[in-house]
Each structure stands twice: as structure tokens, then as C-alpha cells.
Length: 177
Image (tube, rainbow, N blue to C red; front, side, top):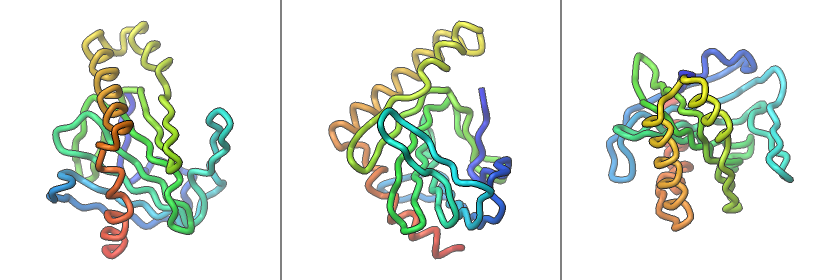
């Protein structure tokens, strides 16, 4: 499994950054929240999802990441340089931890949610491959699918409330930068 850190310190694409993190205990969220301001990047990061061509990282973008306590997912909200949400990226994970910086052990499966409401399920092939290669066992495989399906169901019913708090939490952390 790949460990991902909230500060993205290993990401060489970012030439100039500002980073802040906090621990929140609020009615809508309990856990660590990080905010990374991509002041200057070596090159924009663009991806293609089916018929969509999306820029995820460029000069002036912000990445807000929620690491909820006692959960098996993390949500990264990507904001463009105008402050508009580009997408929510939900990592299904084995565990979340904290060692000066919050981190997650990625369990391959991801959900991507766009402001339009479109949802993409991603990397199920990587999850299948991890199982077939013995990197994960059947229990973790089932855990990943159960978590992804539960979150997908909540999103479709507009009950995955964390998505509605991204802008507010970004503003709160920007004040700490």
C-alpha cells in the first residue's frame, strides 16, 4: 500500500507552497484537516476522465484534505485559482494516522465527485491486482468495496455531508496561513 501525506512534501511538482494543518472537533467533522496552497508548480497537472479534461493542479490552486477520525476514507477537495471547486477525490484507505503530519494508507479504490454531480469510481483494477498479487487479502478487498459502496450510496442520497463543508473549512484554514 502507498502512504500519502497531507503536506504532499514528496511531490516535486510544487515549486512554492504554503501549508497549514489543524485538528477539528466540530459537529460536521472530527479529525485532521490540511490545506496546501500551490503557489507555483513546475507544470500544470491535467487529467482526462472519459469525456472530461480537468486541471487539478496549477499556480494558485488549493488542496484541502480531510482525514476523519476513525474512518476508512479521506477527502481531498481541489480548488482552482478562482476558489471554485474542481473536484472532490475520495481515497478509500486501510488506515489514517498522524506523525507530525496526517497520512493515509491508500487502499487503491477511489471515488471522484464533480460539482456537476457526476461521480466516477476509479482504480478498481488496481484493487483487483493488489488482491491477485497478495498485497492485500480478501478482508481488505471486501473492506474497500464496502466502504466505497457505502460512501457512493451516501453521495447519491446527498447525505455525505463533508462535501458541503469544503469551502467553509478552506476559509477557516486560509485564515491560519
